[in-house]
Image (cartoon, rainbow, N blue to C red; front, side, top):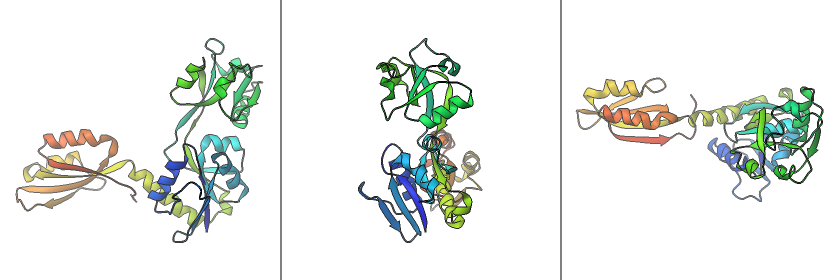
Length: 282
């Protein structure tokens, strides 16, 4: 039985649970559930603190898990990244009061507050920069104002919180992070079960990039229409009760949906419908 760790809270939890559910796995229905068996899939899920997932995977307590790349690297655990999952994207940056630092080299001899001490310390050491890393559990934006540090290193999205604290980012990002599937050393994992999990996750990832488009089009405009929506292999074209019309179904890129609908309408297509794809094997 494959044992999989899932974040039990935080920004990665719900997307991870939703993705696994789209993969066909049973998932918990309320937050108090910490362990869930899925006998049909021969999988057991453990809902753990996001920061602990990599530790459990690395120790061999569980076989695989979902966590952030930043949390994996900061854990120092003997676990490896197996698959990017396409959600939970974040950028890890240094920040300090404007004018006090322009490059990471300016941190030499200074104090840097962060919730990711292992990650930051390793980054600085790799670049030969001697700085004091101050580990905090949260709210690192206040560290400079409270005199605990000269700069911080933290996840940055819009930068609004940093600006409110009188800070500005500088230098290159330490890390581009996102949710990832991690695993134990390959030799210690049931490869067949892990391969099945990987295929299902990839199926959901691929499906999220496409939608199913159905439309009716005059027979005279079929060739033009299918050139707009060629599909993955070839679109399905079926005759309608009205002999002068045909129905077309094609898989198209999700990001191009509205542009394709505009072009199809101009080509004479009507009744254009778009359906999300939850999972696929392409």
